[in-house]
Image (cartoon, rainbow, N blue to C red; front, top):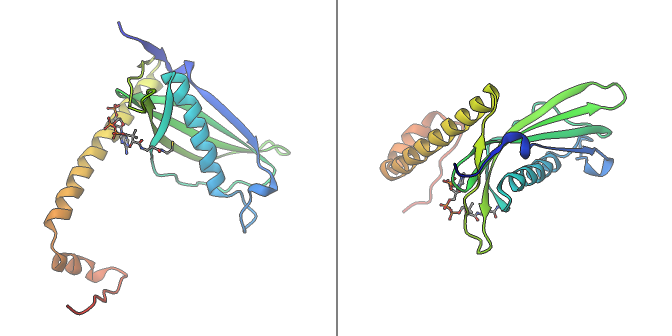
Length: 185
Ligand SMILES: CC(C)(COP(=O)(O)OP(=O)(O)OC[C@H]1O[C@@H](n2cnc3c(N)ncnc32)[C@H](O)[C@@H]1OP(=O)(O)O)[C@@H](O)C(=O)NCCC(=O)NCCS
C-alpha cells in the first residue's frame, strides 16, 4: 500500500486576537485580514499533509456570515478534506469569540485548493488520505463532487463563449440592469 496519512495528522488551528489596526473604515475587522489568515492556515495544513511546499491554486466562494469585531479572538480550524494527485482541498471554518462574554459565532467556511510543488516548482504527488469516520468520508465525497461540477461548468462555459453571438448576448441582456452603448462601426 502506498503512503496514506490520516486527516488528524495535518489538522491545524490558528488563533489570533483582532487588534484595532486590522479594522476597516466601519470599525469591523477587514475581510482581507480574515482571508489572509485563511490562506495561512490552509498553507500550514497542506504542507503538513504533503510534506512539501504548497501554493494556493483556487479558493471557493467565501461568504462572510457575520462581521468580526475588534477585541474578538478568531480561531480558524483547517483540515484536509480531499487529495488528488498533487492537489489538496483544505476545508476551513472560522469562528470568532467575544472573550468577555464567551459568545462564539461562526463567521465563515471556505475551501482552499492547494497544490504541492517539488524543488523544480512542478506539481508533485501527495500522500493519500486515510478516512477514519463518516464525516471524513462525506467531506472527501463532497470535494470530489464539487471538483467534477467545476470541470463540467468550465467545459460548458467554453462552449457558451464560442457559440453565443454578440446579438444573442444583447438579446439575453435586454432585461438586465445594464445599458449597452457600443461605439458605431
Ligand atoms: C496551481 C498551479 C501549480 C497549477 O499548475 P498546472 O501547470 O496547471 O499543473 P497541473 O495541470 O499539473 O495541475 C496540478 C494540480 O493542480 C490542480 N489545479 C490546477 N489549477 C487548479 C485550479 N485553478 N483549481 C483547482 N485545482 C487546480 C489540478 O487539478 C491538478 O490536480 P491533481 O494533481 O490533484 O490532479 C499553477 O497554476 C500555479 O503555480 N499557479 C500560481 C499559484 C500561486 O502563485 N498562488 C498564490 C500564491 S501561493
